[in-house]
Image 1 (tube, rainbow, N blue to C red):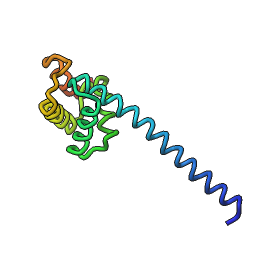
Image 2 (tube, one colour):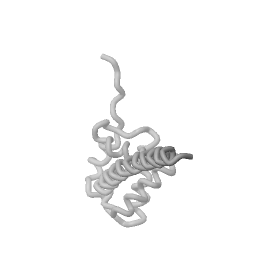
Image 3 (cartoon, rainbow, N blue to C red):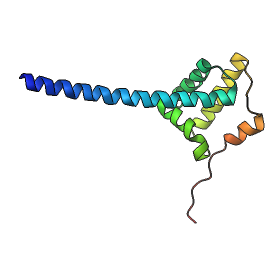
Image 4 (tube, one colour):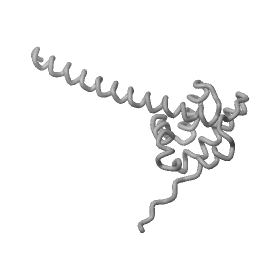
Length: 123
């Protein structure tokens, strides 16, 4: 392999690594935002919020970054996907019971937030 070919290969490797690092940075920010949503709903600590996200991810067989993205977009969409909603509800209840935390949001407000968005129908 010539020196030029080695340099081209090295540049391609670095570009791929750079793209992966950028994606990781974006994913990390979304996960942090989702942890904030979980904390607002539950009164848990950040490490416990992380565990809630991990639990939902494992129970729904959904990538953690995708779970986080659904939770962050929840207010805009008016609901969560059908598989995420019950898993989040159960994980929050279990975490609160295990750690003795209380929700920072009144029960009736929190339950309203769990309703699914109305289905998009043509008018």
